[in-house]
Length: 308
Image 1: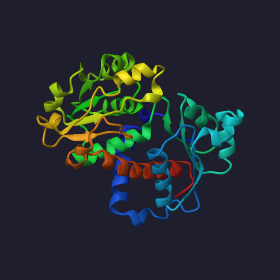
Image 2 (image 1 turned 120 degrees about the horizontal axis):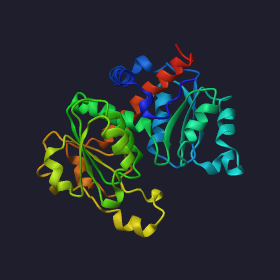
Image 3 (image 1 turned 135 degrees about the vertical axis):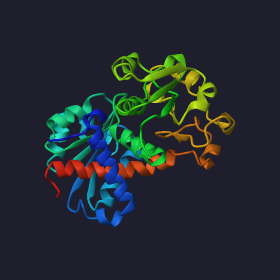
Image 4 (image 1 turned 180 degrees about the horizontal axis):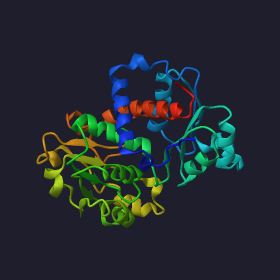
């Protein structure tokens, strides 16, 4: 049974196929409005989420399917001590496909090994978030036309940011990539991402604490929030949370076709004044997330033999 836990489980060709399907959905929504009639998506969210959960639900409804599930662990039998394995065995009796978010790394993998329907990882701790990465890739493709020969700046929390780790993994398979890592010393990209992803792929990368210094060379600026929920120490969070705040004056030397991205939610790391800038792409990312999740649901249900 095919599931999606890590973005690298998808080949470059499969990512291109998903992007092509998503673009076709955008162009021809009526063509897809009954594709999942009679099918059910279970959203098992053991950790709070707004965008991801509603995006999955909107995706399934727009494919003509139905949705069931829960939005926090307290409203599930996990609060009684039920294991993830048992939960998904039960839910597999009710649903055709599962989207799971969990605070513990590896929980969706455990789910996929025990479910009898496809499982999509909707985020597991600081580990993976493959559908956010697919949303990012669709956004980059629509804004830049492709993935080769781009200079991408990642700014903010690069240590705990699962969206950053997943997107670097995905982009590492394309040609001419340059990565600029902008963060405080305490939130630098983990060394294993550099040694296991960037260096083996021969990707040029630089590390800096200054956003302004590198702004002129960036094709894409991927901002992230400093995540309170990943910190063990409140003092460290408060000290680092405002490390980078993107304001219009910081874009004075940026390229006119810079794409500003953010996985959301934002706190204050991007000024609301930037929302009016045509280079702001983060709300486009939200919409693209729905379309790429529609494409992924279709792909996994087809491969499972649930739909034609």
